[in-house]
Image 1 (cartoon, rainbow, N blue to C red):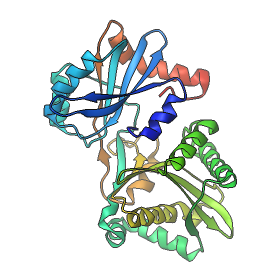
Image 2 (image 1 turned 120 degrees about the horizontal axis):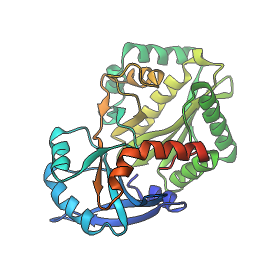
Image 3 (image 1 turned 90 degrees about the vertical axis):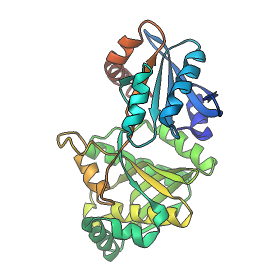
Image 4 (image 1 turned 45 degrees about the vertical axis):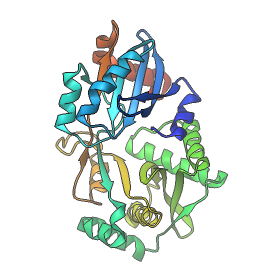
Amino acid sequence: MQSSTWGSIRSDGPWHVSRRGFGAECDYPVLVFERHAEGFGTLAHVARVSGLAPADIAPLSERIRADRGRAFATKIEVYQPRDERLVAAFESLGWLPTRASQYRFSVVIETAMGEERIFASMKKRARNEIRIAERKGVVTGRVQLTDENRRSMLGLVRETEDRSGAFFRPAEYLERVWQAFVGDDRGRLYFAWHDGRVVAGAFVTLFGRNAWFKDGGSLRDQPQLMASRLLQWAIMRDLAASGIERYDLGHVPPPAEPDAPGQGVLTFKSAFTSDVLEYMPAFQLSHADGAEEWRLSESGFLARYRERTGDYWY
């Protein structure tokens, strides 16, 4: 979310995006996303920053306060593993825990270690399902984002949404994201086929030497093919061959909460490696009256917005 690609996507909508230098001894450039929250004012969102140490939080907080403009509050989401020293640094400077807009738990594959070690580090279930898909004749590959392939991918996404109840953004939004990342050479579309028919698909974004699973889907009538398992393995191999060092598979529910929605997603993704990664919590720095009310009522605000529009506010 700190890429220029994401900045251009967000700028084409209700968000105002600016690049600012935060920090004291060194310039720490970040994208700041601002949007009007009805009834509150302007919220500043510093999304998915990384590279922070506890000593950075004081100068960072000072610059954010100085450059807040009309923002009633600033939300920050740090894309780093949970670090209690970093948590304490935020809390000591007046930042309060708030609702995260980005996922907090994920499965990450260290693709830099190469094909053999990636495969060996998987759980037995994943390795067996990859072999099953290969024996059943599933084939995989990277494809161009043509109109036909884009329509196929949207069909897979919508079928998965209907089957699982998972939330996906509207088609117009998804297509805009895919086209922007592919246009900047930061996006890849992958398909799995069986008997000539597309049975699973995945869109992956890249930034530097990192990659993220963005969107995916599969046909409901072919679960026994294990096509999605083989597709993810093919993606890992392709990323490793491209010099990508890290592949983030995206959201999974907290492993310590067995009743949390999405247990099937956790079962699928966690079979690729032994650990589930917890990222830093989100924090809010209040600047004006009403900020605390926003922090405490944001979940309700977002629920009402989705009910009214069918979309996600962030």
